[in-house]
Image (tube, rainbow, N blue to C red):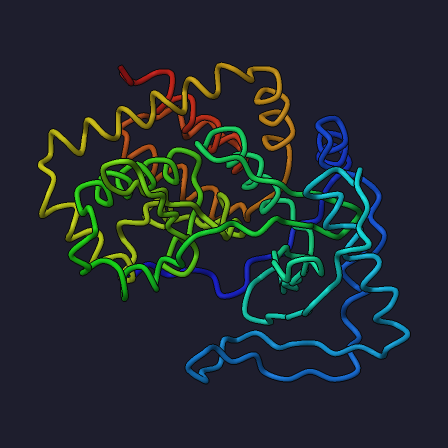
Length: 343
């Protein structure tokens, strides 16, 4: 079992990152900040359908305060989803939940459409530099786009739809209808995406599995939902989901169905796809490289440990010249996507 720091150090957004976010439309004025949600009148545990504690608490606010919160949060939802261009009178806040378990201490907002009772979620979190770098790398290099906004110390994230990884392993992996080969293939690719851009802590509850019916079967997409551990820890295995005990059933599925040559083929395929995405946005990725390379997003001890472990793992001493965790990330991306044979 890999060991994760229980509470990652919080890294504020510096001026260069703020400038980058403004340049690419991620930073806009928001009608309410994170701290505006932190003073409920009362709260109670949120239970699931089986009556079990979900680790979330539902917050209740004074009626006069909630009127303002409702207006602000529905406006934020409109900004996130439709750039604030349409009427929001039909939207209202159905629930505000808080979780003290995660590093970002998130609020989960449930928005309901009063015309048809359809609902959607988004999250209000403490803005953290390493998390934002993780979101940007996900947007730029992964097959799935991700929507988020930042203002001062507040981060707004869209809800990523999918079956939570722990639930998928518990309830889906043994179903007769499951296309196990496709699941194994996607997990190999997910493992490769995380390692290439050094996204850590992909225990089963930190990712979701999207299931899409196709004309002859189902397609699967594994997506991270937690970016707190973007290039923070010093152990290189933290960035390989295959080494977490939670994921052992999926790892066994992969090794039982795929031989070494097939696994290697899928890894090369995924790196080639990431390289093509990177080549379509060279200036934006270059700007992110400069910004991240000069930022502090980990400790000197963890940075030193990781560059030594990566140098040994890849038998490549170029990592030893890196001075920051951001430099390590992009040196790793360069090596895997552009300097090794990716087909």
